[in-house]
Image 1 (tube, rainbow, N blue to C red):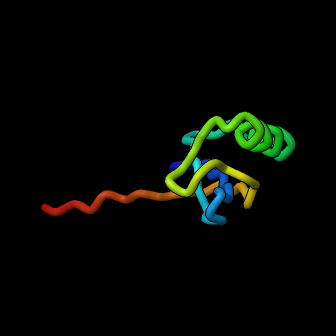
Image 2 (image 1 turned 135 degrees about the vertical axis):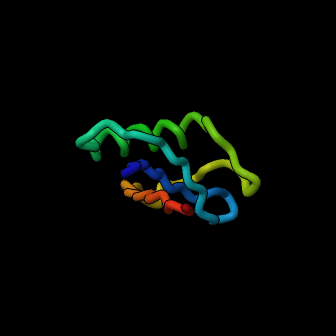
Image 3 (image 1 turned 90 degrees about the vertical axis):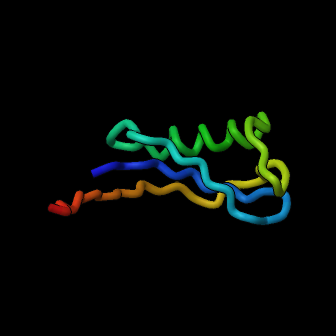
Length: 72
């Protein structure tokens, strides 16, 4: 099962922009995630087609299971 940490921000157009990080360190430290997101916003590290990131919307861990299908 693949785990991904998603960091969700709002940009200048108030649209959601998501950064996905594969294989996050477990357990995820909410304080570290919060601080990292603050740094991304404060230093304008990333931008989107809708402008700079302006605020945090949320963060979450997403689990994804992949099963191959035998076709013969």
